[in-house]
Image (cartoon, rainbow, N blue to C red; front, side, top):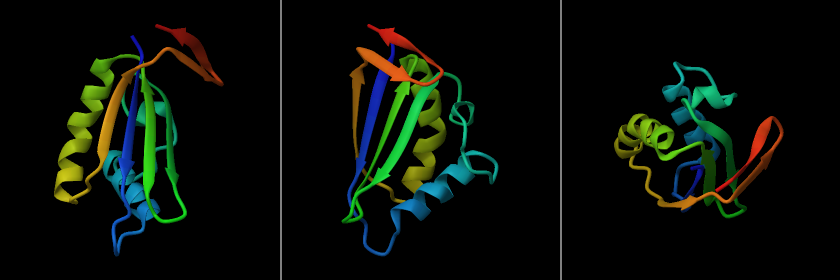
Length: 107
């Protein structure tokens, strides 16, 4: 069953959220930007990262299943801990996904 992960990050003084995102992505991907779903690992359907005017950020991922998300989080978690990146994470069952190149998925 597809799942959606919503990670919300508050503004952090002295840290530009886009630069933090780029640095983490490059660390996860052997120094290269993450530009395709396979860079996240098996099972990512869609990913977006947005930054608000006041510096808060949100990442939204849709995964084919819990297993793919957990494998990615096993790679990401230690980096977030080391860099002291904190946020609120919500995981929801996905009812519908509509994206170019992604089959429509319904629970």
